[in-house]
Every structure is written in structure tokens, then in C-alpha cells.
Amino acid sequence: MANTKTKQPRHFLSLLDLSSDELRSLVARASELKKMQHAGEIHEPLKNQTLGMIFEKSSTRTRVSFETGMTQLGGHALFLSPRDTQLDRGEPIEDSARVMSRMVDCIMIRTFEHEKVDLFAANSRVPVINALTDLLHPCQLIADMQTYFEHRGDIKGKTVTWVGDGNNMCNSYINAARQFDFKLNIACPEGYDPITEIMDPAGDRCQIIRDPMEAAAGSDLVVTDVWASMGQEEEQAKREKAFAIYQVNDDVMAQANNDALFMHCLPAHRGEEVSASVIDRPDSVVWDEAENRLHSQKALLEMLLC
Ligand code: CP
Ligand code: NVA
Image (cartoon, rainbow, N blue to C red; front, side):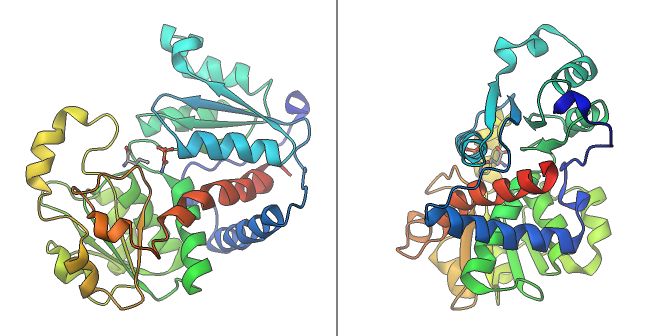
């Protein structure tokens, strides 16, 4: 198993690590796996395989979906908190990657600096999955795309509006716009733009429109995220001021197309980045979006490990 592997592992650190066709297949497979699971069909291609899960930040959805997904695929998941491993006591990332990847079959990491997952992957014999860094959250995007496809069909040529911080989720939406070929309007306050290294290669697919009402006009999907991400807690008060008009509420949704969807990776703060009236609508798809983390990551594990 893990220590007999000789070929170079395939990692998933960014949406750009897979081709557009591969991402589309992944989304289709996620919907297939969802149907199979809902029908009670047992599908265990990962028997005897172990996923190591390193969490340096909190998580509900990511931990529960990866752990449950491995169980459903017939494998096992190992929760590794830096507090209880040697990672917090200064063992180098490179050494940890070399050691863990001789034992487990895949490693999932949620951390702060993106460079850490790059370094880990460069020293790993097995696939490494980025489960969120300060820069990117690609696993959330495959679930979001699956959710859009399931509710509205292909997202190619559609218009998506991002309202809020130019953060890890926004960066991942920019990469998704390139890979799935949709138009992305970004409504963020000055000083909170996504970084140019991510923005520039997307060309004219992505544009910044400061006014959220103007940005949402004619959109097929409106997305937001918290104003202060994990690690930015001390900036909460400053950000509340900067983002005061960047709330997705009924007025913003009224600018979008009639059948526009609203998405949020969760956890959400009602009354801040989204009003309760928008997130709690009876037809809100945020719960499908959260569930799809399970199915889309099962499709990802299958693609990387089978
Ligand atoms: N959306 C998401 O990644 O949620 P968690 O932080 O709960 O894992
Ligand atoms: N931008 C948020 C996403 C949480 C899933 C954060 O990084 O905290």
C-alpha cells in the first residue's frame, strides 16, 4: 500500500491542479456517488486505505465530510491535531510529510500559510489535498459547482457575483471562473481586493465592481463568506466597518436574475455578510452545498487514489 508506491503522487492544492475536463468529470461523479449513497448502495474502493487529516484551524464540515467519506468508501480517516502531534513542537514540515506519507495513503491539510501545503506536498509520497489555506479553499468549490450543476445545469457562460472579502474563497471562485468558464463580478471594499497573482491570469472573466447592487445585477449565482476569516479575529471590529454595505440581503438578491441561487460556504453570520431572510429562504441551497462537500470529496478521493 502506501510504502510500495513509486509513481509521483497527484496533489489537489488548487483548482488549477486539475484540467477543466477533469473538474467537470469530478462534479459529474460527485452527483453519481450522491445518488448511490442515497440509494443505500455500498461502494468501497478504498478498503484498507487511510487518510491523514491535519487540522491547524477549526472545522465542522471539512472534518465530518472527509471522515465520513472515507468510512463510506471503505477506508479510514485519522484526525491529527497539531497540539497532539509533533507538528506544534517544531518537527519540520518536510520530516512530517516524509514520515506520514510512508504510512498513510493520502493526506489532507487545513492550515494558515499556503506555502506549508506546497512544502508538505513536495515531500510527500502520497496525494496531498488542500482543505483550506489563507490563500485557497478548492474543496469547497467542487461542492459549490456540483450544487450549481444539480440545481441549474452547466455554469459555463453564466454570471456569478462574489460579495465581500477578497479572501481564500474569493480566490478559489476566480480559479473556478477560469476552469468552468463563467463570468465573475467581485464586489469588495477597497483594500480587500483578491491578490493580483490570482486575479490577473483570469483576464476579463473577472472584474471588480465596488457596489454590491451593481455587481449583482443580472447574476445567476450570488456568493458571500464571512467578513473576518479564521486567523483574522482581532480585525473583526475594523472589518465590520469596512464591510457594512457588503451584505447579501433581499435588495441585493432582487438585482440578480429571478432564478439566481445564493451560496455560502458556512459557517455564516446572519446580520453581517448575509441577512437571515436570504440564507433561511425555504429554497436555500446552502444545505445542499454543505452536503455536497461529502460527495464531491469522495469523488476527489476516488480520483486521486484509485
Ligand atoms: N465550509 C467549510 O470549510 O466549513 P468548515 O470550516 O466547518 O470545515
Ligand atoms: N474564509 C473562511 C472560510 C471558512 C470555511 C475562513 O478562511 O475562515
